[in-house]
Image (cartoon, rainbow, N blue to C red; front, side, top):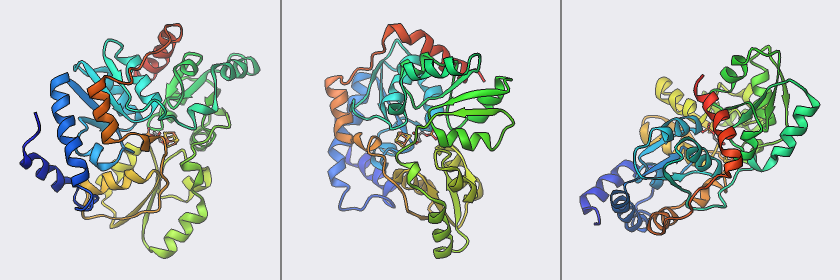
Length: 324
Ligand code: 13P
Ligand code: SF4
């Protein structure tokens, strides 16, 4: 059953600062259909902070960073979870709530970090550094998680590393996250050479130019950015931590050195803050659209499955992280 016109109108009020009126009519048919399909199928939509505002603010039930989405996926009661995010996020939701149907609207929504390492690579690192625990970023396949001791996200990486009580840890696969954590701890970090194709493109020169062009601007960076970018920023943290920072400090003017939709989504909540918007698009996150979310619910696709040979060990690595 389509929603009433008044529902659509109130949804537009929410996003009017970031979606021009001329674009809105292109979204309303899919939004109405998705809201009705969620009720029919007893489905919830989990959306990452990098999803576009018409997804994030108009159809998602649960939003957040990778850590929040993993935690919340565990306690979803609905029959169906649609993961509006990338493949590893849907895989993590399936690992943590295996009884549910988990759908990802586009199977090709990947991640350059997840693509940078295989389970065989992790085993080689273990041979090279015997006895050194392996901390694996959640931006990896289930097979890589299964070959690891514990997972982390950008929101808890320091805590996870220090929880192990080891003098050295292997931290995979994001070289920059590993180096940014190494700068905050006495634990020796052995890194891999994976990079996020979105965050590796920011430079400290970009920040210096921004500060010159916008005196007084507050600069927030994601810890997947190179260490010189994090060092030049006023604050570095996960997507949720950046959003919280804006809410707590309400800077007059801010720039988020991260994916483009992040500023749009946070700007909706903080009309008083001026967002300067140099940003980089994640082509994988942008594969998810209202049209393919609708198709996912209509056609029950694409159903996440995890190789039973790796599922239990991968789940253990994620649950060990969540227990911290
Ligand atoms: P967060 O865990 O900070 O949301 O980051 C996920 C991600 O893919 C960032 O590029
Ligand atoms: Fe992966 Fe980077 Fe895209 Fe996040 S922003 S999903 S780390 S490629």
